[in-house]
Length: 59
Image (cartoon, rainbow, N blue to C red; front, side, top):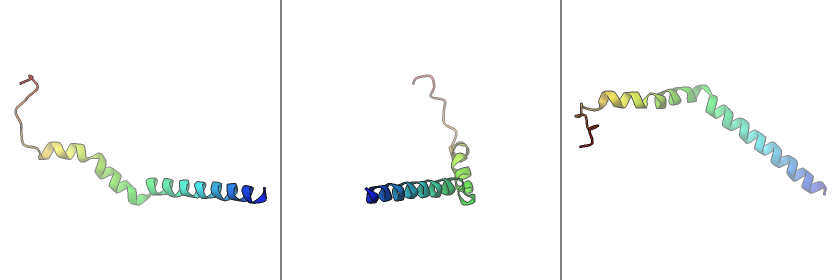
């Protein structure tokens, strides 16, 4: 029974540590630039595409 409790405790500590690492990686300073660039990709594509005729009439 003692070994089972130890394994559960170690697994809980491992999961918590993994959670903290993921949160720090997602909200860290290095990630901000990457996320800002990804957020602006939609707007950058509009500037690069040539003017296409409007095909919204179903043709």
